[in-house]
Amino acid sequence: MLASLSGPLPAAYERNVEETVVVLERMGFRVRRAPLLEAGRRRWWSAATPAEIAAELNGLLRDPEVRAIIASDGGQTAFGYLDLIDIDAIRADPKPILGYSDISLLHLVLYARAGLVGFHADMAVPGFGGHWQTAPAARRAQLERLYARLLTDTEAIGPLPASPSWECWRPGRAEGRLIGGVINRIALVQATRFAVPLERFDGAVLFWEEMGGQASYVWSYLQVLRHCGILDRISGMVVGVPREIAGLGSPEGSPTLSEIVLDVLGERDIPVLGNVEFGHAGPNLPMPVGLRVGLDTRQRTLSLLEPAVRGPHAVTEPPARAPSGPGAGRGLT
View 1 (cartoon, rainbow, N blue to C red):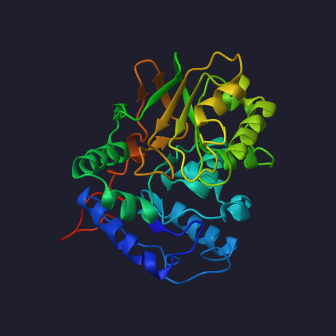
View 2 (tube, rainbow, N blue to C red):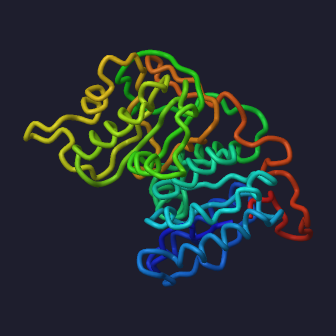
């Protein structure tokens, strides 16, 4: 199911949604659009009021035919309805939510409160319908296979496909639960009653990315994580490709992103893998929040050590009211 979980869909991006449907159907999934995903519909900076978005999301969570929910875009809205989400529905029928940016909040909060493995992964705008369309054909095919496996396989994926851009910023190995998202959302949610309990970070591999703002903001967000005690608990760190962050490595003497990270980490013996393709730079490697991973920064590898979906919650599981006839494919609606 494609749904507006935060920002609106400008009419100019309707094409991105249509292209997303093509990509997902090529993977073999059935795709539907939720009613709020309507071009031109908006309320301030959002697709609708927080209560309206929560009501639609809860309906999708309770619908046995919906096996996964893909956000249309990020935005600024998820904070407005964190207290309205039907947690019991998630516990009764876990189904993956895909998205990044503002959707990071949903992944963090729903993992902390219900154990849901959410995918910090591509969405319709600008992901499947944007970045994927301009990526080399071989990369698109590789990602299609990866996403299809992630949503359907009940076996561990193993190593994610690496690229030459990956950099070892601090050598070492780690194994733990993958937790993270957009760094500003990680920092902000820890100031609320929906904060991820600190013990969830014990031995975790923290991943994060950021878009916009200043290099000094990233340094400050990392300092927040240090003051929270998060950096004292994690076993490893994976940093995404930065996008549109002013001042990084500028001629005026501003630091690089790796210098910022290592400055805040100080003497902590934490392996760091940098410049990994997830987040706003896109197209995304999917990062399943809560999944156990293995990290080896010397070898520049990141491996998913367990399946993201299991048994009756795999997207391949037939829905309660299975459709028949032409067009009946895998159950991603």
